[in-house]
Length: 324
Ligand SMILES: C[S@@+](CC[C@H](N)C(=O)[O-])C[C@H]1O[C@@H](n2cnc3c(N)ncnc32)[C@H](O)[C@@H]1O
Image 1 (cartoon, rainbow, N blue to C red):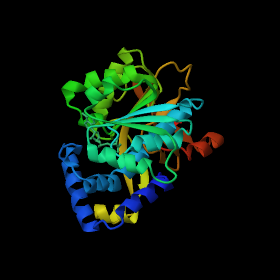
Image 2 (image 1 turned 180 degrees about the vertical axis):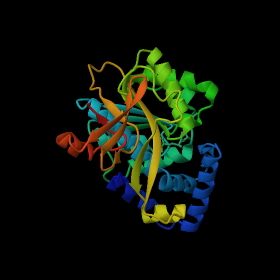
Image 3 (image 1 turned 135 degrees about the vertical axis):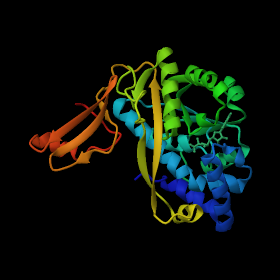
């Protein structure tokens, strides 16, 4: 399970003192209903709204981004970036996750059109034990703000491109790629539509000479492009008591489904392998795996008789990359 780091939970809890949980729950419900109906974060108009977003959505988007970055680090473990550009940063979720993965980060630039979410990012960043990097906040529409943004080691867009009008998407993607020093990280909801957008970004970035670092272990045709299956992953996260109350939820955890793409520039011979595309099935016969290979998926069973491989395979999880 991937929870928020302690400093962030403490900072959020501090902001919840004296806030009516009933009012927070009502706003969280309205925000969730809006997202589910295809609406955007423009529904977040007050400090309470921003807090409601942070309580019900930030733990999940944080877990998804952190999981995606952890997968990238398996492929490029030596990479130690100094700077991040976080586009559609909201309360700074992707920057906080990146800080947890890369202690080397010294500077982050957060861009968002929503003043209330950006104000919350500023407050969280000023909390005790927050990552000590130098943060610049730019409020404005991504198209304009990106033209004044610095070139950075890692550019991130977490659950943000989904809110950009389709006509502006390719232009923004090219702006992001131009500002990318080494890595571009895009995380989207793990829905069919989220995956379709990821596929479209992949095509555009490959045509611009990108290396795909994760989740794909190759740059060839995506085997799921024409399939009923879609490439997505799942991360379990704990729900705090306030998270449960605000969401009217009965269980103390949730599973966040996400799709992602991490594209790179200038990485030498990264590790290839096969990505596990679904929860491995452990049966009497062995461990059955659905794997991503160039232009096709592979079904592979590691039988009990392959003792060492079977023992290792029992530890495999959906989303892992394995060197078969
Ligand atoms: C669902 S929130 C995600 C926030 C954060 N990245 C996360 O993962 O929790 C989407 C964010 O994108 C921002 N956004 C949407 N369209 C934008 C645009 N055209 N320019 C700048 N920010 C935008 C919203 O204000 C919001 O903060």
